[in-house]
Length: 144
Image 1 (cartoon, rainbow, N blue to C red):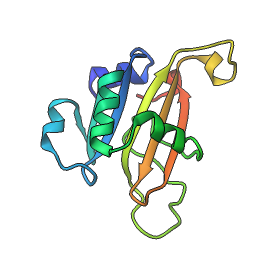
Image 2: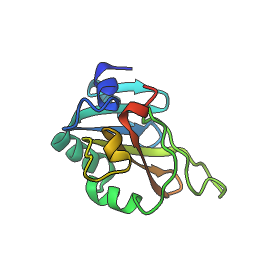
Image 3: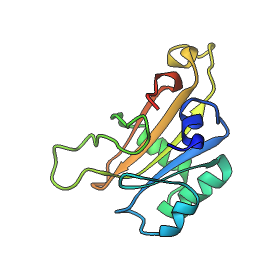
Image 4: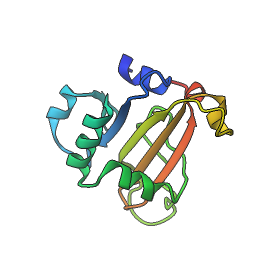
């Protein structure tokens, strides 16, 4: 795991975003120069503005618009940001994630809940079947 991904997952890069793009979704070897080769794809950690632009270019969807739609359904996303569990996995077809978009939010005791416990990782995934889903956890809870 690269330092940038480890730092992101630890809540140390609050201005950055992470983007996992599955090989089955984007076939572009040039992405590796911007990120880290992981099982099944490439994971990129970049500053927020560039990351949102890269997300739009890769998916054809605005990052925050996608996040809002994915928030409607919760389902686990791996804390290393390279896999997820589709909420429709009982259906026909392949249910591997096409992409995962994530950002970290600073601890906020005024909000309460997991936000009071530490920095929070927000992750949003889209499955090959088209289902969008979200997960969130405390950065300190990550196994990374």
